[in-house]
Image (cartoon, one colour):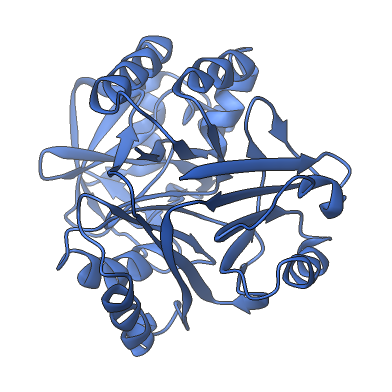
Length: 351
């Protein structure tokens, strides 16, 4: 298979798709102001070609912050694109669409990936999708887009998750997740007084969550929202840790970017040697795939901000380019199989 990446920093879609011939699957990344227009234009340029899209930044060797970007796959794939609607209420109502698509694609663990863009309520949407994918061992990566909008096959949807099932007809696929954080000492908490609808943590080990976080890190209240770049929480998920970013302070509570429930076990994380972690990820991928056709990745907005502040973002993209054709999306929350994670990177590699 082949991967195409095109961009226009000025939002010119015709410029972004220049050179794109006979695509079999397209992903569109645009701004809130131009998204609907770009979705319509894309469908006119490539009528009937399966596509999904969202509002967000994208990248290859550089980041497209306010323009438009297109990633397309061709030559040797089988694709099905669809949406699950009403994700805030009952996405399972539309599960037959995904079940039918998996049957049509006839994918397996070795050769198929699901890429999704979600408009919200990610945890519920992922649980629904993965209940079908796990029956065939198919992995998933994806992200939250902005403004509660996604697109699929030329249509705009709100309160929905758009997905593409992609089967590599000539090789393997594999999903990866990268975590640049490690557990900080032996801090472990039981969450309580949570509000699932507002993603609030009220108490940690029976004490006000805000105060606990401040006291451990010796920071003022106004530093909490940026301190999450260095010290997010981690939610234990078996042997894995899902990162939980802090969004803002609400009284004595902490509002987060993913749901935390009463009695969840949380740990405090600290930023590790992220440059070494990136090099290890690249090395592992190269060991697993001596021949790489494409790499599509999703990097968290907070990772993008952290890397940019530390003057590492350009170096990061250069290092990832050593894998070959690498391009991706800056997400507002990352997906890896059935997990909704923050401040992470997930990616899929095509042989």
